[in-house]
Amino acid sequence: MISKQDVEHVALLARLELKEEEKELYTQQLNKILEAAKALQELNTDDVPPTAHVLPIQNVFREDKVGKHIDPEKALSNAPDREENFFKVPKIV
Image 1 (spheres, one colour):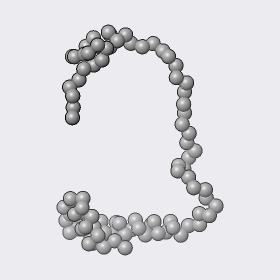
Image 2 (cartoon, one colour):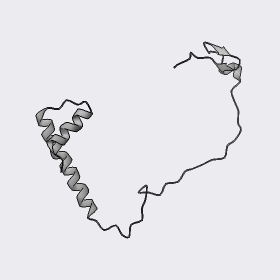
Image 3 (tube, rainbow, N blue to C red):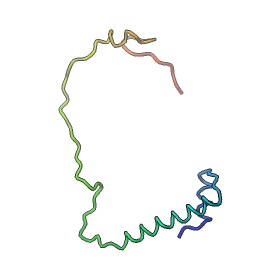
Image 4 (cartoon, one colour):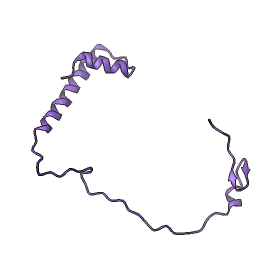
């Protein structure tokens, strides 16, 4: 069970300023969420295999193919600054 003090503590950690009505509202809402989670724990899941996704998902890969590439001179033609065949940008630390 979530208490009003728990909500105040989390709000303090999150640097949130909550009004008194909000504290009451969030306390009620969080307790309802915990009740729903408790109801789910009572379900029999013995015959349900563990899954990461509800639907079967698989990665789709394609063959790498060599294709047309833009000419380096054309790619760098509008570069404000360049060094050989590379864009030159300011160092960011």
